[in-house]
Amino acid sequence: MTSTTPEVASSPDTESASNANSTDQLAKAKEIIKHNVAWSAGAGMLPVPGLDFVAITGVQLKMVNELCGAYNIPFKKALARPIIVSLIGSLGATMLAPLVATTSLKLIPGFGLLFSGTALAATSAAITYGVGQLFMDHFQNGGTLENFNLIAGRGVFKKKVKDVIHETAEKVETASA
Image 1 (tube, helix red, strand yellow):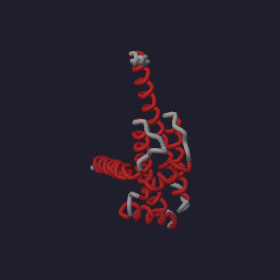
Image 2 (image 1 turned 90 degrees about the vertical axis):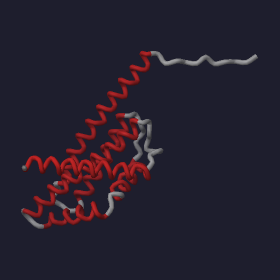
Image 3 (image 1 turned 180 degrees about the vertical axis):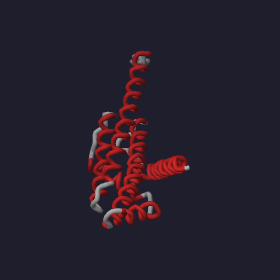
Image 4 (image 1 turned 60 degrees about the horizontal axis):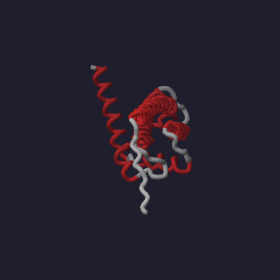
């Protein structure tokens, strides 16, 4: 005698509840990213070189923690921190060297502090946006911190950051024209 297990079909109510939950998660995730991009920009304005980078990384860790909460995924700082640091490192010397040089200008009172803070605020906001978008997409597709593909993520992250920087530059050019 063979035993068969009946197939369970999802009802329209279950599917619509799942879609609504996914839509709610996406909206919450976008709000989390938006909020933390603003915090990251503010951290870029800190007047002490080095402290700005620590604060920006802290904001990004907080954001990933909040995104994990939005998607009911366990947050593990020991997994998230190396991923974030590796993603930022993947931007390479061409993007990071000017950033490091710019932050050292904070040592010059007045214009140096203003120029450096503004430049770092814009760049850190773009990087934080890229980190947030990458994790949001990963979590939206059922991923977790444990199965995050860092190799594939680096390329996507670099593209997201470059796109944001390019869009911002275009908006500045349009506004000043």
